[in-house]
Length: 316
Image (tube, rainbow, N blue to C red; front, side, top):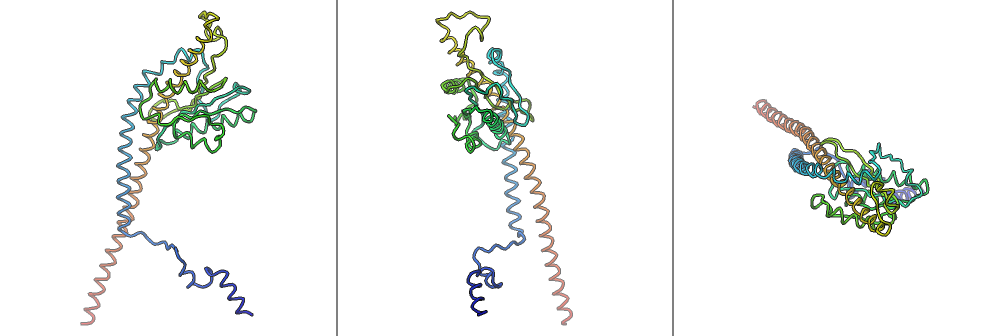
């Protein structure tokens, strides 16, 4: 009876009975100390990585100078639009008061990049959008999302898949320009909304950018309320307001794209600098391990040689 039970246990748990069965298991991993060759290979790969990240930092620094020049020339382009819209809001920890959009058709437009390796510049934009959307949903307002940039889609798709109305990709193959901004603005204006928010990063310095929310209201109302200093005839009011709506949207988007491009390059510079430092630190650690392993091997060989010589002398 006992032998039958033992056979049943061993057949039910063949991997846990005896050391021989455990040793015969396939794909058994045994952790051993890295050899000198493996350490040298790892050191070499880390040095190559440090060279690549340093090169990427230099490239980002050069692109940042160009983006700053475009930003300095274009950031005053939308001064008139800023005078008829609400001012920009700089969010803190992704929080933004959305009470003005409650009960209205709302469109959120996050501006992200098409490439990675740029730190948390895209994640912070996604965090602001998710927080805004969640706050509006709590108050019964469901906002649509118009994503600009390839990296914004995977950040928002998991939670806002049903609310994403369009995605613009391959935008940053060329520097930010008004033609692209106008084409995107035309698609944004085709959406149905009463209130639109651009979410992007505002460039402050090479080491600082701020999460920004820019409200762009719909200008479909009374022209005199938006342009109090100008007279607009009633028959031409729809055409005037439609043209002004397109101009306001394109101008606001263009300056936001300039800010986002400069912020992306500054964030990439910081990320590549941190990556280079981490790679250099790892090179130092692995070099120390390699030197210790090499010294231990040399010491062992010397001990073996001395011991062998001593044994020959004793034999004679």
